[in-house]
View 1 (cartoon, rainbow, N blue to C red):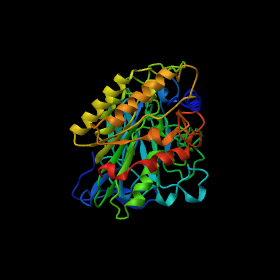
View 2 (cartoon, one colour):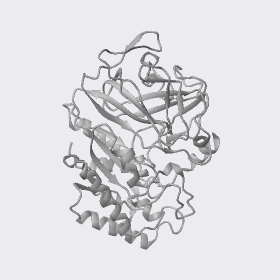
View 3 (cartoon, helix red, strand yellow):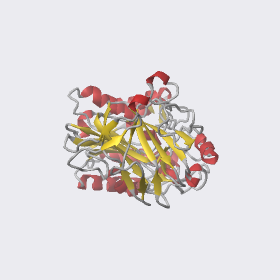
View 4 (cartoon, rainbow, N blue to C red):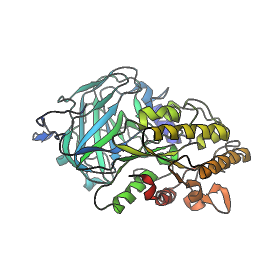
Length: 434
């Protein structure tokens, strides 16, 4: 829920190509790479991140200038071809992408995830060109690339921005170390040139799709920092949506496995903007995103193959903003109506306990009563297509207003790796509608 302290250090420091014939582009190694034909199968969303505008100070505000960003993403499902989606949705100017590459991590140097397997390095192109402009407020879709992506695997995307970007469009809580260095490092096999290594952010990168013979669609998780993985081990992909994807892969050996797209935003609220201050002298930041209802058109509906949405939001409206249960319930109902109106399966999750989190006033008996009222409504409602009772999974039976100690990451609001596994294990797969 609250922004990790390490973020403040970082902030202070620092079109699909549809052709009758496949396009041929030069790879980094001098060989040729064939862009995927659009008739080989269907596209499936495999990884995604919700993006926001850069904060008012720091690196995300000043932006990048003749710098490269190397980002590691953990995909849910694989296929024989890939395409990457970039976003300048919140930028204040057009942004030039000078060069972009995709690769697999170097398995021999697992302690430094900035290193890539040089044999796997491939250039990404945009309508046949190595460089492209992202207009202000626009997305940029790479050409399809024949590149085998394994289920449940890491990809490394490197982008070079040769000219000033201005304020970035980014995702502020990655639970993944990413890398920034001077100049064009898109072809660098090792990470020596990447001197800035924040464990926080994906810059301009918003999605990865893979091509599959057939796809049952994708599951979108619309959540806050509990879905974003705060409290889980960095670089370990122990967020509960990642662990749910592992369950789905194990459950469906026929490979008709849905993608899992984690559109969570740490600190996000149903009824408030990210910049609005909260209890405990919490100042608010752009990276917490707009109110959740405003995110549907940008973060949920455009996702490739979305079929089912899990909404787990509202706890920040309680502790940060002291909203009454009626306001929280009303927005959850409105989100549900919009999802169902588009034919999507709409699941909702109960709000988990947080007594002991933060400064005095962050948790109060009155706020706990609000949480209980929202959960009582959700358990009794028949409006949603299904309920995930995350409160029942994480709470301490002896003290229901607190997390079970075995699942507490230490801040009394975010689950640790074991808690994330418990959440993933508690999702009834039959409810997913996939």
